[in-house]
Image (cartoon, rainbow, N blue to C red; front, side):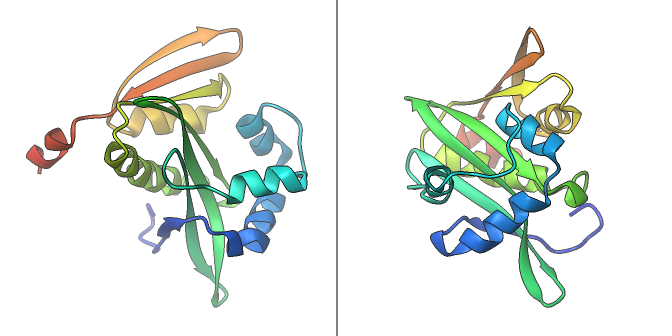
Length: 170
C-alpha cells in the first residue's frame, strides 16, 4: 500500500464468505451505492453465491487482504466479467477506511494481468460521475482509456496493452 503496509492480493474463495460479508457491512451506504448503483445494505443468498462463485475463466474475483489484530481481513475486492469476446466489465469495492491507500491500484494491476492472460483486449466500467476514487483509479492505471458521459454516469473503456508491450517496458 502507499504507506508500505503489506497487502495480499488473491482469489476470492467460497470459504471467504464470512469475511466477504463482514467487509460489505463495513462499507458505507454511499460506497455500496457507488458500486451497485442502488441503495443496498444486504445481499440475497443468490447475490452472495454469485459474488463468491467466480469461475476464473470469464468471471474473475480478487480480494485484497490485510493482517489486522493477528487475523486476515478483506479490505477490498475487484472482479471482471467477460461480456463478449475480448471485452469484460470491471468493478471494485474498497472498504471505506482503506480507501486512498493504493488497494484499488494493486487490485487493478492484478486484474489487468489476469485479463491479458484470458485474451481480453478491453475492460470497461460504468461509474457514477461523483465517484472520484474510481475515476482516479482508472486515470492512474496507466492504461489508454476513453470516457463517455451520459447523465450522471461515466462510461470508461480501458485498452489493455499487448503482453509484449508490458515486457518491453521493463
